[in-house]
Image (cartoon, rainbow, N blue to C red; front, side):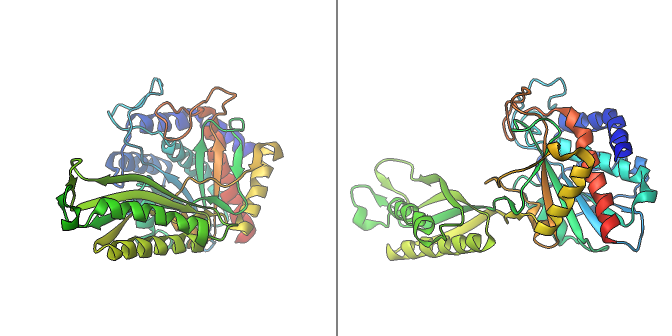
Length: 393
């Protein structure tokens, strides 16, 4: 344990170099050619033979080719935002910024790959490294899964990690839940097709604005009257758009929003009822409604046996005082697509607390991360993988 932590600390310069290069050159979406090329080249320098999968990069470490496989994931995409952090290594690409810490995730996973390669003789099974694009609403994890990520070889367990600035805990603290970690997130658009008319003759038309208003109110009953009251559910309407002038009844209009839940059954029920209510109300008024789904993230739920096991390994590595059990958050995480299919665990890593001066969290243009946390993240990835393989192969 001590030796691995020392090795991780010795990598600090490399971790910072990787992180800052990626931070200065952010790419948005599911297509990250520059970032993938950079990660691929760095992995090759370590002795890996990385290969593309579903828009991302995968590498394998075969400690024991006949052993089990644990997957470690780091996402790589940025956000379409203008950086205001004031960092000397701020984004060089206007309108793009690593505001969610994915640059730190990529750097920490590269660090873990280096640590595990340097300790290959101690790895009792196989480690699959998942460098993922498109986490920010582009279904990057799902695309990699559909492209065969979890097979050849089959993945037996998976671990993801997320940096958290403006944390409640000091830099280097690992945080996790014992069950649900993050909520589902299903972005939707309800389009109502009516019939345009003059505002003075509403009887000549079918008013989509009126219909959308009825739909908006009726959707709230999913939460208030149909949900198991022990299960959290959020249905938020963020937009209601229709018309071009005050005296015109438009042909069409739409509303958009999101559904978030921790329970997959609650999520499925809410999505089904949204479609039924929207289409039914539209039909009642003589119109039609179509529903489009954008981001569709399942809830991120830690496998209880796996998270308990990995918790123990992290405590071995860092000590009890640097591991905190926390409450689930209503944010979402598309690593859930992996965790739906294999036992998975998800950690958060404090990369700066408010008391330490890190005042802004993810998706804020002023967010900053304490790079002193990077060796901890790499060590946690590597040590938990080694210990899990040791105990399960």
